[in-house]
Length: 462
Image (cartoon, rainbow, N blue to C red; front, side, top):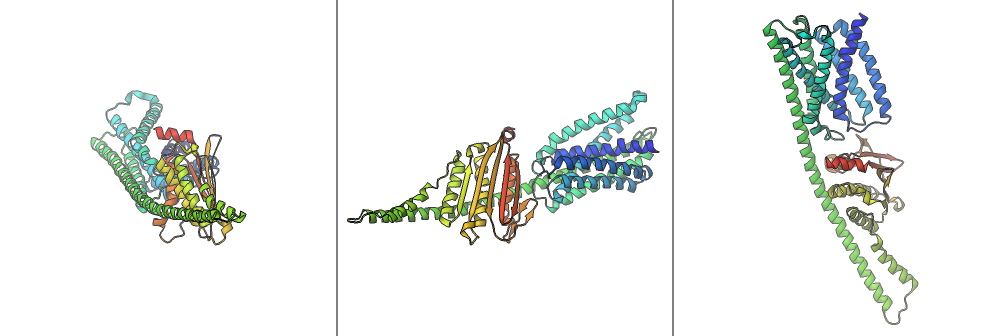
């Protein structure tokens, strides 16, 4: 009995878990990792391996029953979902979708192998293996799995996997993931249990041609079901991306309108200052009027607005920050900036403008609500150290700030309309392989973005 349980644990349950983890890795490698990720990963794998050994006893007694088989795989899947939830700083819907996506691909690969293997048994292609059948079977299965996994990656997974991290998973995607789970668990378990009893000599070897055709029909049907569901998931992802692009364009239009208002206010401020300077110069140069020190200082103060130009080494960033600095001058906000803009050359101009425009605009909106002038402070730092580029922003805020999936929830009523700014920041950061974190403590909001520029350049060249 113990030997049979060990065989079930090693060749069935651990093999299933290994395949599922491989596809989970391929699909969720871009997800934001939780703190102490290596410890959580390896400790979780050890715990699940131990739980699988316990389930091997259940499988030994009840694995020949459809419901027992379904129960074992559902428990294993639930454990993998819990483990992924502990390892990644993503919402439960994103993790559940990623694991279900992985399960569907794993089942698709397994069923494709069964189509090939059942055909080989039917045509007696493996009869010459003799006593080495077990070894050759494992080698054949592993080779097929590696080839099929590579094909799944290049033909399907990689086209969508980069769109999953930090993205809003709506209920349609969640329903699709649950549909994947139901199809893969039920069909696989029902077929394996019933056709195992009809096998002759070896599992999936049938003397009756009608049984062979029925088995292959079930395998092909399972393949088609998984393929259809995966295509449905892909279609949903594409639709969601199109919807986000529309939101992004709408946000860009709103941002442009806001930028126009800021530019208009800045021009008005410059015109007022120019008028003041002209008036004061006229007063100072009038006949018999000796310039007073107070008047000279007042004139210097009026001219000081033109010293707000910021030079970072990046023209786009210079324009953004200079304009924001002028806005701060007009509205009594202390804007402190130390930025090495030359290190941001790996980013597209549009992404750079949108990224820093959103960062600074959100900060200005927060401090603009503060009645205390001394708290109207925005600090922005862009620096590189040891090949790592860091963008840090801090500002005061009023009220209570809540976070959902790592993003600050908007304080405005319409979260879809007003919450896209921070989502677009994270989308741009993910595009360049960076990491984004945000937090709030003691009335201070902090935002940190980390890039590895060399890595980002490689990603762009692909």
